[in-house]
Structure formats: structure tokens, C-alpha cells
Image (cartoon, rainbow, N blue to C red):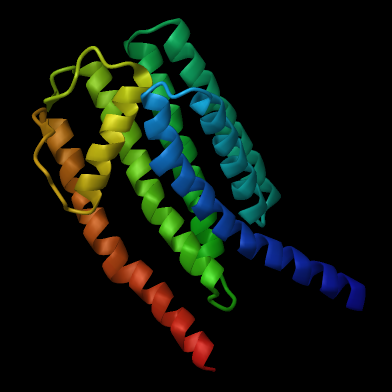
Length: 228
């Protein structure tokens, strides 16, 4: 019984630490690798792929359920297949499949991270970092949604470069997503299509409510746990 309890304790610590690893890898992927790859900096494509694989492995470690692990792997495989289909056979159907699969994969990942963050147990610093991962995931999900809208309606946004390659277009929409999520709104990229505007409104609402409610709550519980 004592050995089992010790092993379980080590597994719990690994689950918690993986949330911090997720945050680190996601920040590197979003703020370093993706912009560099969009500029065709040498080897950044490989680096971005490796960071994405590391991010997936950290997500698997954060999961406490075999069913969740299987679901993450299936969604990641479908997203990868969708991306390959988009590049080999460009078209409205493959765009819908590729970007839609990415949205679903990120949503499932967010669900797994959310269960790890808001599940029973002491609120540690790792869980606080996991809550930040959720916030960043919102930006990624909306980025995929914006990319889908642009593919289906090229004039949905004003001031986009129509000749931009896939990585550059994704990096640009990621920038727009973060300025919307944080309500920065520089105004250099403007949503024109009704669905693009509706999606931007939804992201702005999520960007305001999540830090003010759930993120603030998890930080408060962490501070309270530290005082006990």
C-alpha cells in the first residue's frame, strides 16, 4: 500500500509539472517559433514541429485518464491529416476539414488541461500556469477559426496580404487573435464579414471574462493554499 501511494504521488507531481511544461512550450511555439517560421528563418520549420510534438507529449502527461489520452491522440492525428489534405488538395472542403480538425484538437486539449487545473486537490503554482495555458489556447482556437473564415471568404478581413503563404497567414491571424483576446485592438486588421465580426466579439468577451473570473479565482485559491 505504501509503495502504491508513493508511485501515485510521483505520478500526481508529474501531472502537475506537465502543466508548467505546457506553458513553456506553448509560449515558445506561439511567440518565437511561429513568427520565425513565417519569415522563412532557417530550421524554424523543424523547430516548430518539434515544439508542437513536445507540446502534445506534455498534454498527454497532464491527462489523468486513458480515454482522454486516446481522444487527444485521435484529434491530433485528424488535425495532422487535415493539414496534409489542405496542402495536397486545396479547396473549401479540405479547408473546412483541416481548420475544423485543428479547432476540435485544441478544444479537446483545453478540456484536458481544464480538468487538470480545476480538478480536486490543492491549487499549486503549476495549476495557475495551466490556467494561463487555457487562456493561450483560446487565442489558438480562434486563430484556426479566423483562418477558416479567410479561406472560405478571402475578403472577410481588411488589410490582409492575399499573397501570404500559409505560415505567414497563420501568424498574422494569431496576431489579430491576441489583439482581440486582450482587447488591444490596434486597428490595422479589421473584420468585415459578419461571421468574422461575430467571432471577434465572442473572443473579446472570452478574453475579458476568463481572466476576471476563472483565472482570478484559481490565483486566489493558490494564495489561500500558501497561507495555510
